[in-house]
Amino acid sequence: MIELKYAKYIMKIAETKNISLAAKELFTSQPTLSRVLKNVEEEIGFPIFNRKVQPLKPTIRGLLYLNYLEEIAGLEKKMQNNAKKLSEQPKKIINVGLVPERGLIIYSQILPKLMQEQKNINIMVQNGFSKNLEAFFWEGKLDICILNSPLQRYTDRKIILSRENILLLVQKNNPIVSDFLIENGSVVKFLDCEIQGVVVLDKQSRMRAISDEIIQYHRIKTKNMIEVFNQTTAAQLVASSNFITFVAESFFNTISKKIKDNVVSYKVGTTPYTWDLLLLYATASERPLSRKIASQYHALCRSDEQNQLLDDL
Image 1: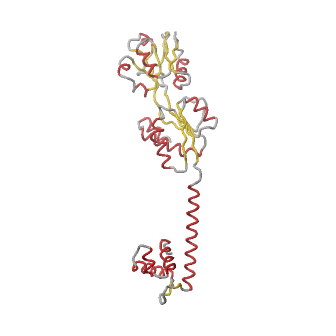
Image 2 (image 1 turned 90 degrees about the vertical axis):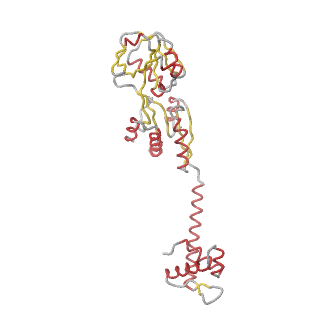
Image 3 (image 1 turned 135 degrees about the vertical axis):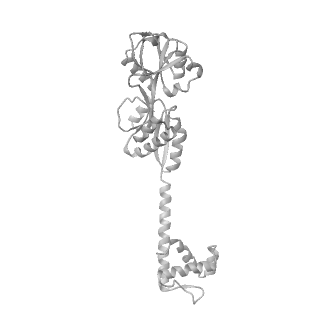
């Protein structure tokens, strides 16, 4: 079958009724165009034009062939118009909820790249506390939700993006440490003691939920419960008092040397408490996009722990 790219050459000859003039309008040489015409005629098995007359006239079978080419050109134009209409259709909106701090890499590096790759979607991002984002997710306002554990409601439509330990921070010279049962760098039991004070985060924070769980499970007795807005303030209070607090391992790795020199850190529990960054997806249709986000996140933040999470996808 003749390649369709030659159709415009043949139709231009039919339009101009002259090979030299057609070659000029096609920005090619007359010998090249003559060779194309000869090859086409050999392929279809009959002459398209009567070369014995000028201007050129199509043969009877050539006229049928030209009609065929016009039909092909019409179908091609129709296809282009349909493709244009499809490209002009509204993009599918994907509503994504995102915790600001731990989700920064996703917001700045992954989502923009995905929108460039997938022209048919438009990603709308909403930042907020994990507690609020999860509520919006279950209300159907978010298609994908990236938030901190623990979840308030169980779902198997989730992917673990990262996992880190929860650390107990204590001032270095705090005598209360002698009342901790410590094994392999982890406090496995709080002996019968009363702690001067526990610094916790705002109730909107998932870290607060984890802190409350540890305090309740280990029956930690405290004289004071001090609520602050962020982990930096909590660490500063611990460094200058006999208080304790619970923070994420990633946060501890970023605190100032001044604070770090004045505190010690321990994991908590025989199986240490962890803080997961989770990705929830509402329906099966969001799963492929969710897996892409997870794979790219793990590639950017690769570690031994995340390598295992990636293998589990």
